[in-house]
Length: 207
Image: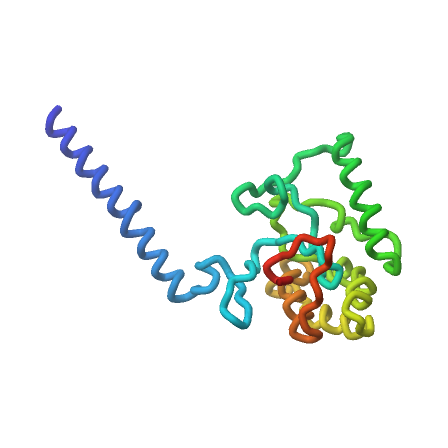
């Protein structure tokens, strides 16, 4: 009995060292060498080196001069990476209908020159609540508002968005999309940073 307990303890210790220490350290080291940026969260930095967001996590952009992403149900204020989730509200939910109705009214008010219908993804949350991307169609729908806020021709904003369209992975997987943060940074680089909207909560990229 004692011999069997010692064998079990040795096996447990060896397993813990191999799988709980050596393997994680090895994988972390490989990731840091081969995929340094992604291993550290795909962080995006501005010209001064300050972190303004992540390529993988959406954030709120209330300033009309910026591209706006999908709504988020992650956390109390949305886009909370520690509370990643969808709303889990079904199609018969009054709360969901009221929220979508309010978003539709807001989008129509903020985008009076945009064509109807409003792209569905602009009023629906993703399963994670952190989706950092939009379809090109949903991004281009916002061009009139962005162009008006920045006092530039719509064609110039369209060009910035279209130049940031990412195709299907390996030409097969997924759908074409644009990263909201990448487009907003490109807009600032092309046209300069806009004034902060008085009614909007500032974001890291809008400061």
